[in-house]
Amino acid sequence: MAKFFKKFLSLALLSVLLTTNIFAATVSSECDLSDINVPIDTATTNAAIGQTLDIKAKSVILMEPITQTVLYENNADEKLSPASITKIMSLLLVMEAIDRGDFTLETVVNASEHACSMGGSQIWLEPNEAMTVHDLLKATVIASANDACVALGELISGSEEGFVALMNYRAKELGMNNTTFKNCTGLDAEGHLTTAYDVAIMSSELIKHELIKDYSTVWMDSLRNGESELVNTNKLVRFYKGTTGLKTGTTSTAGYCLSATAQRDGMELVAVVMSGDTSNDRFNGAKKLLDYGFANYSFFEIEADLNGVKAVPIKKGVAKEIKVSADGKLNLLLPKNEAKEITQKINIKSDLTAPIKKGQVVGNADVYVGDKSVGSIKIVSNNQVNRLNLWITFKWIVYGLLIL
Image (tube, rainbow, N blue to C red; front, side, top):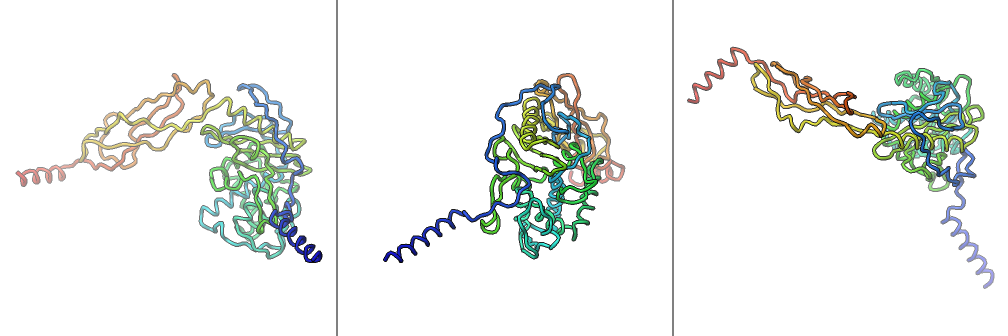
């Protein structure tokens, strides 16, 4: 009886251990996760526009991503080693490939020997191990896994070398003129350099893809049916209100780096901190930048107010008037103390004469803050109107006679 009881107890304990996932292993991370549960500094930064922020890092920048307006910077153009914030470009290319339909989140990737040889942060992929794009994205974004990142790059370009060439080409397209990538992971390599400004540019482009936030906002997750635990290397995800991402980076050469994104009250911001001395330097530095932006600026998406414009008269056309609409919106970033008096003035071109093409600009909605002009929105024709000629006039006269 005692022997049976011991066997039963052993089986029960094993069952508890399995159901509590105690055997799940946290994947190798670029960060020391020993303090991952320690909150960042909770004091709010209340610096006014023009004041200097005390941030312990070589290079920092704060950018509004839609207008790409720089709100704060210090030494933002110095070329520095970026560590794993390199993966922002890698992830951008993955998002763009998904948008093109090159593959889906369910596409299965078999890991190459090269991808499995990366070292550093990793999920310990084995050669030929099959994993979906979805799981590789989780590993790359949440745990900064180098092996997963290379596997995604090889899916797109066939090799890491080809993928890196594509990264550099895309960087030039975005105007990242001080960036050169030597690999897709951020492992230290001679000549692998970028700047805080360039990181802000590629971060701004990446967060246009809402899909990335399905990964960059996750605090904890797992792979391999719970056998591999993922913990986000970005503490702001847990401890800073409105955080939407984005990517940490740490190597002995680069120091502690972070591109952090957050959104509040309809405005998203990108804060980049490069070459901090400690992990807390980057998190607290990014928090100070974001606090500064949210405290001092507001973002507006202005639509043209055409409620008073029913139709626009035209001359010498087969129709006497055209319907109009606004061509787009005006994105406006303003200091909060200037955001009270936003007004518009609708200006329609006088003496509009047919022919009028669909989409032709017929006026503008000029936007003002106080007495200052800050931009305009095009007003365009909704339809095409041909010019009236003798033949059309003759047909109208005949038709009029026939129905009399």
